[in-house]
Image 1: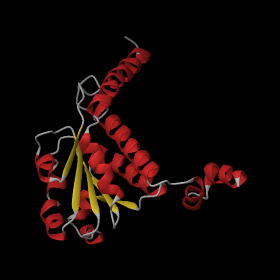
Image 2: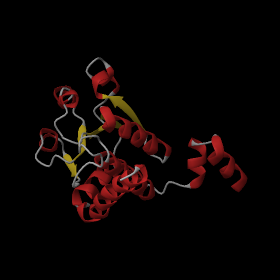
Image 3: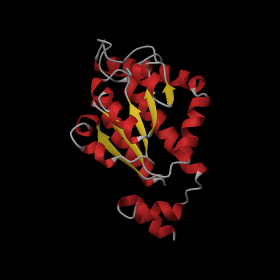
Length: 197
Protein backbone atom coordinates (compact mmCIF):
# COMPACT_ATOMS: atom_id res chain seq x y z
CA UNK A 1 0.00 0.00 0.00
CA UNK A 2 1.10 3.56 -0.65
CA UNK A 3 0.37 6.86 1.12
CA UNK A 4 -2.89 7.43 -0.77
CA UNK A 5 -4.08 3.93 0.07
CA UNK A 6 -3.39 4.62 3.76
CA UNK A 7 -5.39 7.84 3.53
CA UNK A 8 -8.32 6.12 1.83
CA UNK A 9 -8.28 3.31 4.39
CA UNK A 10 -8.39 5.83 7.25
CA UNK A 11 -11.29 7.67 5.63
CA UNK A 12 -13.14 4.41 5.00
CA UNK A 13 -12.78 3.25 8.62
CA UNK A 14 -14.19 6.53 9.90
CA UNK A 15 -16.95 6.66 7.28
CA UNK A 16 -18.24 3.25 8.30
CA UNK A 17 -18.58 4.34 11.92
CA UNK A 18 -20.30 7.58 10.91
CA UNK A 19 -22.85 5.60 8.87
CA UNK A 20 -23.73 3.59 11.98
CA UNK A 21 -24.12 6.73 14.07
CA UNK A 22 -27.59 7.52 12.74
CA UNK A 23 -29.02 4.52 14.61
CA UNK A 24 -27.38 5.61 17.86
CA UNK A 25 -29.21 8.95 18.16
CA UNK A 26 -31.78 8.21 20.88
CA UNK A 27 -33.93 9.95 23.49
CA UNK A 28 -30.88 10.89 25.59
CA UNK A 29 -29.78 13.18 22.78
CA UNK A 30 -33.21 14.82 22.73
CA UNK A 31 -33.10 15.22 26.50
CA UNK A 32 -29.67 16.82 26.30
CA UNK A 33 -30.85 19.32 23.71
CA UNK A 34 -33.92 20.15 25.80
CA UNK A 35 -31.74 20.62 28.88
CA UNK A 36 -29.38 22.94 27.00
CA UNK A 37 -32.29 24.89 25.53
CA UNK A 38 -33.69 25.47 29.03
CA UNK A 39 -30.32 26.50 30.48
CA UNK A 40 -30.53 29.76 32.47
CA UNK A 41 -26.76 30.13 32.69
CA UNK A 42 -24.06 29.14 30.25
CA UNK A 43 -23.03 25.84 28.72
CA UNK A 44 -19.54 25.11 30.03
CA UNK A 45 -17.66 22.58 27.91
CA UNK A 46 -14.70 20.66 29.34
CA UNK A 47 -12.27 17.94 28.38
CA UNK A 48 -8.57 17.23 27.84
CA UNK A 49 -6.45 15.98 24.96
CA UNK A 50 -8.21 15.57 21.63
CA UNK A 51 -11.56 15.70 23.42
CA UNK A 52 -10.51 19.09 24.75
CA UNK A 53 -9.77 20.34 21.24
CA UNK A 54 -13.19 19.16 20.08
CA UNK A 55 -14.68 20.78 23.19
CA UNK A 56 -13.16 24.16 22.32
CA UNK A 57 -14.73 24.00 18.89
CA UNK A 58 -18.08 22.91 20.36
CA UNK A 59 -18.13 25.82 22.81
CA UNK A 60 -17.27 28.25 20.02
CA UNK A 61 -20.01 26.82 17.78
CA UNK A 62 -22.59 27.04 20.56
CA UNK A 63 -21.64 30.64 21.35
CA UNK A 64 -21.82 31.75 17.72
CA UNK A 65 -25.20 30.13 17.14
CA UNK A 66 -27.15 31.53 20.05
CA UNK A 67 -26.19 29.49 23.12
CA UNK A 68 -23.81 31.30 25.50
CA UNK A 69 -20.91 28.94 26.11
CA UNK A 70 -17.23 28.78 26.99
CA UNK A 71 -14.54 26.12 27.37
CA UNK A 72 -12.76 25.22 30.60
CA UNK A 73 -9.77 22.90 30.33
CA UNK A 74 -10.27 20.18 32.92
CA UNK A 75 -6.72 20.51 34.27
CA UNK A 76 -7.13 24.25 34.72
CA UNK A 77 -10.50 23.61 36.35
CA UNK A 78 -8.98 22.10 39.49
CA UNK A 79 -6.48 24.97 39.63
CA UNK A 80 -9.07 27.70 40.00
CA UNK A 81 -11.05 27.82 36.77
CA UNK A 82 -13.94 25.97 38.42
CA UNK A 83 -14.68 29.43 39.84
CA UNK A 84 -16.05 30.33 36.40
CA UNK A 85 -18.87 27.82 36.82
CA UNK A 86 -22.16 28.62 38.57
CA UNK A 87 -25.21 26.65 39.65
CA UNK A 88 -27.35 27.68 36.67
CA UNK A 89 -24.72 26.44 34.20
CA UNK A 90 -24.70 23.12 32.40
CA UNK A 91 -21.34 21.35 32.23
CA UNK A 92 -20.86 19.38 29.02
CA UNK A 93 -18.03 16.88 29.34
CA UNK A 94 -16.23 15.20 26.46
CA UNK A 95 -14.32 12.02 27.32
CA UNK A 96 -14.01 9.12 24.92
CA UNK A 97 -13.32 6.60 27.69
CA UNK A 98 -15.49 8.21 30.33
CA UNK A 99 -12.68 7.56 32.79
CA UNK A 100 -10.38 10.52 32.14
CA UNK A 101 -8.75 11.22 35.54
CA UNK A 102 -8.41 14.97 34.98
CA UNK A 103 -12.14 15.18 34.33
CA UNK A 104 -13.08 12.93 37.24
CA UNK A 105 -11.24 15.33 39.57
CA UNK A 106 -13.83 18.01 38.69
CA UNK A 107 -16.82 16.02 39.89
CA UNK A 108 -16.76 16.67 43.66
CA UNK A 109 -16.72 20.44 43.09
CA UNK A 110 -19.34 20.32 40.33
CA UNK A 111 -21.56 18.37 42.71
CA UNK A 112 -21.14 21.05 45.38
CA UNK A 113 -21.83 23.84 42.87
CA UNK A 114 -24.98 22.00 41.78
CA UNK A 115 -24.63 22.08 38.00
CA UNK A 116 -26.49 19.85 35.57
CA UNK A 117 -24.02 17.64 33.72
CA UNK A 118 -23.92 15.95 30.32
CA UNK A 119 -21.19 13.63 29.06
CA UNK A 120 -20.40 12.61 25.49
CA UNK A 121 -18.52 9.30 25.62
CA UNK A 122 -18.11 5.85 24.15
CA UNK A 123 -17.85 4.46 27.68
CA UNK A 124 -21.42 3.35 28.22
CA UNK A 125 -20.73 1.95 31.70
CA UNK A 126 -18.00 4.42 32.63
CA UNK A 127 -17.75 6.52 35.77
CA UNK A 128 -18.78 9.67 33.89
CA UNK A 129 -21.74 7.97 32.21
CA UNK A 130 -23.00 6.82 35.61
CA UNK A 131 -22.38 10.17 37.35
CA UNK A 132 -23.75 12.66 34.82
CA UNK A 133 -27.43 13.54 34.51
CA UNK A 134 -27.38 12.59 30.84
CA UNK A 135 -24.93 10.29 29.05
CA UNK A 136 -24.68 10.57 25.28
CA UNK A 137 -23.15 7.33 24.06
CA UNK A 138 -21.55 6.72 20.68
CA UNK A 139 -20.02 3.49 19.42
CA UNK A 140 -17.36 2.88 16.80
CA UNK A 141 -15.46 -0.14 15.53
CA UNK A 142 -11.88 1.11 15.77
CA UNK A 143 -9.60 4.10 15.49
CA UNK A 144 -8.33 4.78 11.99
CA UNK A 145 -4.59 4.59 12.59
CA UNK A 146 -2.60 1.40 12.05
CA UNK A 147 -2.06 0.99 15.80
CA UNK A 148 -5.73 1.48 16.63
CA UNK A 149 -4.75 3.97 19.33
CA UNK A 150 -4.66 7.55 18.02
CA UNK A 151 -7.94 9.46 18.56
CA UNK A 152 -9.23 9.57 15.00
CA UNK A 153 -12.57 7.83 14.57
CA UNK A 154 -13.55 8.74 18.12
CA UNK A 155 -12.66 12.42 17.72
CA UNK A 156 -14.39 12.60 14.33
CA UNK A 157 -17.57 11.20 15.84
CA UNK A 158 -17.36 13.58 18.79
CA UNK A 159 -16.96 16.54 16.45
CA UNK A 160 -19.85 15.41 14.25
CA UNK A 161 -22.16 14.90 17.24
CA UNK A 162 -21.16 18.24 18.77
CA UNK A 163 -21.89 20.06 15.51
CA UNK A 164 -25.25 18.29 15.19
CA UNK A 165 -26.18 19.22 18.76
CA UNK A 166 -25.26 22.87 18.19
CA UNK A 167 -27.26 23.01 14.95
CA UNK A 168 -30.34 21.35 16.45
CA UNK A 169 -30.22 23.65 19.48
CA UNK A 170 -29.84 26.71 17.28
CA UNK A 171 -32.82 25.73 15.16
CA UNK A 172 -35.00 25.09 18.21
CA UNK A 173 -34.10 28.57 19.47
CA UNK A 174 -35.10 30.07 16.10
CA UNK A 175 -31.64 31.59 15.77
CA UNK A 176 -31.72 33.88 12.73
CA UNK A 177 -29.27 35.34 10.23
CA UNK A 178 -29.40 38.82 11.77
CA UNK A 179 -28.31 37.53 15.19
CA UNK A 180 -25.63 35.37 13.59
CA UNK A 181 -24.29 38.52 11.94
CA UNK A 182 -24.40 40.34 15.29
CA UNK A 183 -22.16 37.66 16.80
CA UNK A 184 -20.02 37.23 13.67
CA UNK A 185 -19.35 40.64 12.07
CA UNK A 186 -15.84 39.81 10.93
CA UNK A 187 -14.27 37.74 8.18
CA UNK A 188 -15.81 36.53 4.97
CA UNK A 189 -19.03 35.47 6.70
CA UNK A 190 -19.48 38.93 8.18
CA UNK A 191 -18.84 40.55 4.80
CA UNK A 192 -21.32 38.28 3.04
CA UNK A 193 -23.98 38.92 5.67
CA UNK A 194 -23.42 42.68 5.41
CA UNK A 195 -24.02 42.46 1.66
CA UNK A 196 -27.25 40.53 2.25
CA UNK A 197 -28.71 43.27 4.44
